[in-house]
Length: 323
Image 1: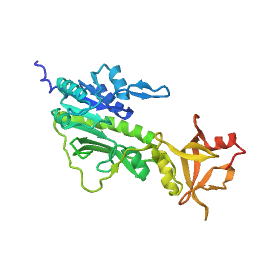
Image 2 (image 1 turned 180 degrees about the vertical axis):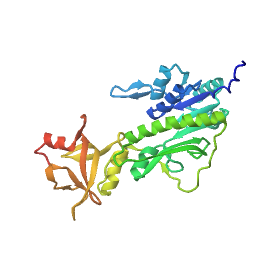
Image 3 (image 1 turned 90 degrees about the horizontal axis):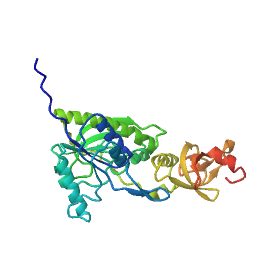
Image 4 (image 1 turned 30 degrees about the vertical axis):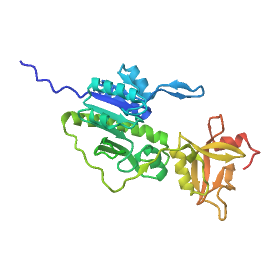
């Protein structure tokens, strides 16, 4: 009996990503058996107290799996890092990918990169486009009080997250979600969604859909200065920001004359006439601060150089200190 004809060769999937969010999708692609001829990731960066150079999460996985790796400092052929870009161009051309999957890479892809793979570049974006285009979609969705977010797999173009949508999957934002917990959930969703996308691309069944003109919003990069709490804001706005900025940059407040990181809080009733930033009397020694509207009970904080502790533990340690 004649052997069944073999199917078409599997797509060659190059990959560009850097942080832990991108690691999950690369691992899923490799585990599913897609050939990965090249991985692009950011150069090693200094981190930790010793500021030693640390490889990205994607680089660590690529090395562990024996995947070809490139770490250009830039991709513009006529830019400051033109030599790096030319080397990356040669490496991508030699890898001959059918598609380039991109997830939180951190470098803008110039036209030559977008045009090189036969099927273009697919981006795993951490929001339901067109809402929260840009650098910090996970944090901004929590900060804004969105009821849900998700992952959009999109075909990249020259704009900022403006390309046509290919697949999307939503997930609710829980009342206690932090940027860290939502990040992990979205990374897992992105890993599964890109596998669906690659299977559809292999079969030729991907259906690009232009993003609607209505509902566009931008998730601007999180700046460290945003972590300073302004108690004139409503309590619910501050509470969401605590979760949105966990783990970076954290929110800073003053407690007994000391600057601390406030990680978690609970919205409670305020007191008539209380000024924003004023401590309010509370049962059981709870730490409650008046806000522009309502009040916020402190639940979890971190002293300089210490670990995260509950507000109750801080009170037990410092029974004689104000407030």
